[in-house]
Image 1 (cartoon, rainbow, N blue to C red):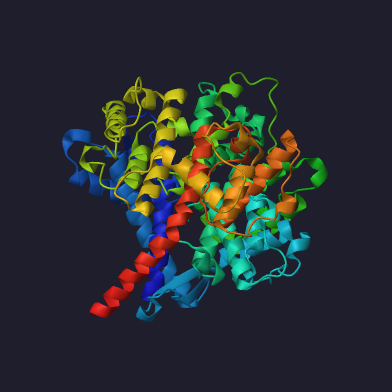
Image 2 (cartoon, one colour):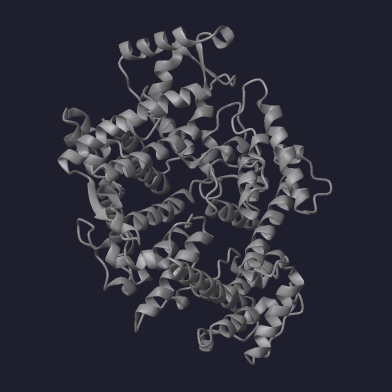
Length: 640
């Protein structure tokens, strides 16, 4: 039982820490890096701690007793974060003891890994299991390809079994990010264990391409239906889909949430969570309600904010009312409130208990779903400068790649989220472990020197690029710090290129770095050995546009994997795009971790085309590496 508590305790505190990191800048109202002690109660309230006055006064007295004169009467942000994490840790420990003693919401599972005999256990949040199963039933229940799997039972116990053939997971990805997977690549009939495994590989690699971090997950885990891994992956995919619409492109009315002194760039810098909070408060203000929402945990447990929000966005014809507020019992009140949400077809993700318990993920999903279906924002006649800040295809690909690497914080907008250098350092460390001297990196920024500290980080990032022989002529740390789009993208591309080639070089294990010329040679050797007629001149070759070279290469790597009846030969733009979609999905199905988009092939974008071929070249070495690992394992056993 202590294992369960430790796992869940760590997950809950870590989730809170990540949320707190995003909220800290908003708490620093005057931008001096401090929180006045006389504002401590309000600050704690904003991050979800509604403490009685006497308890806050005791904290203040304790701090005053410890503090030196340097910042008397104030807490710096590090001190405030430490205080909050301590409070959260105690709160979670207390809550989990109660929950486990009542056997509510947590289900204990014996470890399924090779070390399960050592007593490894994981706990599964049953409310997530229930919520995700309900969401799947509601959104995909009509799909004819899923009739053998849906609906999942009301308690969600069959969720993990339903995932195991890979079809459902592919469909969930396409629901969140349409057209990510070409349906022609999914094995839907004559399913064997092997064909199911291909589907799971396709789904897993595709989820990485849309920005999911799958470092600790493989297709075997999904086939076995490991609950904590399945739920973690599902949340990432669903979250990406929900948040993909919280953009100016999808909802121009978001511009109406800007304050008088703000510009569109300020909105782009905000996380989706922060935008949703501002959206909720915008509607509370329009409804004439003085209360404001500062978090999706403690602030929403009484259903008051939700009731007023639903009433405001519904319109008169929906007959949404405030009857919930007449009920004193919070559980009953939440149920009545959710009945109002059902009138808007937006009851997804939450039960009354989830509201009362302030379950962060599910309440966040509930609000995002409300926003996506009923934003209730007036579309401005014209938005000046919108074209210059809309995310391009290239920017989105780079952002998805970074997020799939597991960088922290999550990258929402390239130019603001990379401006302090911290994400860039994490990528350098992945490309060449040990290259970053972390003692030179400012991980926290002091109030008086933060601008200089961030600039020093960016200057060091450029120095590291030069160490790796990046072409950085004309690029300085100031350009990254300023968010210069052209120069920032130039660095990011070289990071992605270096990452791709470093993976290839490690797999080849020749001691020499792989260069682009060798990739072209490998492609042509592979094609000719398989008896294919297509050949590749270079990554600018116009012959790439119809997708056939990529398709032939996939079939050369895995003979018989391509259904050539699906390959179109007319050469029209439409047919070329169809081929490119099929090619990328089939490449992912055989395990190539391709981030490129179909348009990168049809438009022959040499940079991204190179990564496609490099990822497929890597597949040639994986079996060899597996056999090396197996030999090492056998030798190790023999020596014991």
